[in-house]
Image (cartoon, rainbow, N blue to C red; front, side, top):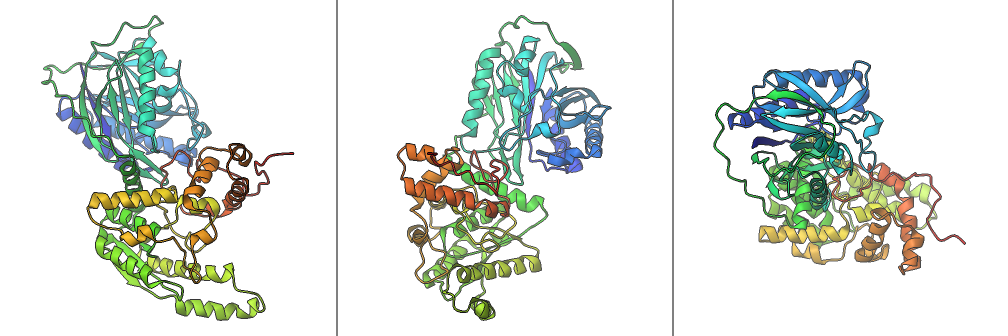
Length: 566
């Protein structure tokens, strides 16, 4: 048996001292409860992803100094700690240091570097290879990092073939819908080949647009889940991992072993198996991800309060609820900014929402500024019919008001746009798209409604007024305006846009699959034309397998349409 402390922590990129302090506290807890080893996430010392901080030679040196501080404070209980590690010639590795008894015993290096989706590790890191096992309390432990366990025939299988009795895998695995099931399938496929238990520790918390869900796992040599840490929350989970079930070591040249520590002189009383958390409803999972991402983006960037425009629509309503859950209602400031086109029911709905949440709501009418802009622009627009330019003035005036409040009171402005609008450019640049963070910009409009209804169900009362969920969506920038004046129904729009964005389908492929040709061509053109807007939008909480931004990098200047060629 090996007593493992799975240290699922919320760490911050660049906060070397703060990260080490959090790890020292977790290490002390594991040691105090008789743990043999405490395992921390990938690149825990510096936080993940450090991106081009890695281009600074001093950065890796500072990470090494922070590691040595952690190692010096350690005792018999080993610590497996992720960090960037540089050779004397400056070659940089994504590494895991093993520390015990006040010193760094050795280092393992990540063998397989992901370079897809949100990952670009080959930009800075060099791939390593398994060179040694670490003998922790009499157990031969193979240390691997994230992608290593995903590769058939890769580093993890070499560790097992070289004599590892247990595989430890350090991760910074971002959340998206369905990710837990995907991880479990990968881990079980690997265990089926190596017949060894696996400790999988994951990062938790938000970092820019990424959000890490934690849900660290311990699986036995048959692939059964022995333990699972909480979702979207820090946890130090102690698990006694039995090694008797491990099958014979595969025939291969054994790897060298580095001694780390002896078994405890008097073995601690066996821990009861930890209770497994109840599965999350898919909508609750997404909602918790949005709350965690919003909370960490705001607080890690030094803000306490947020503001947002309250239109009485479903998008701003959901963002207000997310913000209140993330920060507390006293730190959320809603602003109603009516113009001559604002309906009374929208204002009433915004007021009802603010009352149900307990957030501040202030009313600042924009009509004086709206009319002033009309007068200023009248000579330039003389003889031309009113249209989009005049409508968008209202949205940009609202952005000016919100930014003025944010600047004056040191609030962070939340944008309230959704993924459907971002896909087709149904937003005003420098207007409703303005903000420092966009909580639901990776959530399709149909999902916005589903999340809003689910949150009301969980509350047992209409946090979001029922009328908001029933009325036709409208930007209210002209009389009797409806989104449906410009767009197809969101159920149809979302289905086609998801196929184009997340499925990477072309217009021709969707037409061949019997989608409406004219509608698909129109939405495909809108999608391409709106790329310049998306590039200027705020960071968003990533919850799908392909979000706009890091996941999807389409040229702005681009004439490929993916339509059928004659």
